[in-house]
Image (cartoon, rainbow, N blue to C red):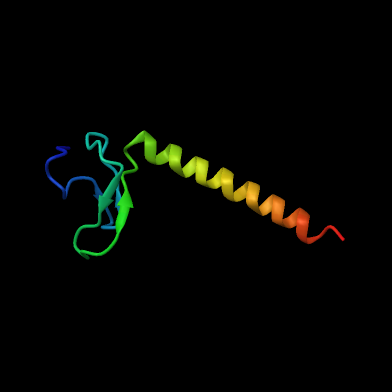
Length: 69
């Protein structure tokens, strides 16, 4: 896949996966509205893993604070 062609890498028109494209955040094609992440870039996966860890920590903290009487 060439990184110069923006149509390469789109899966079902919603997900973008192109290892040769170095961009992490991509403007969605077709709709002209919104952005998505390039799942072919390792930094997108690292961002998602960190995001899930933060959410899990917040849920754990809020759960413990809410139910501790």
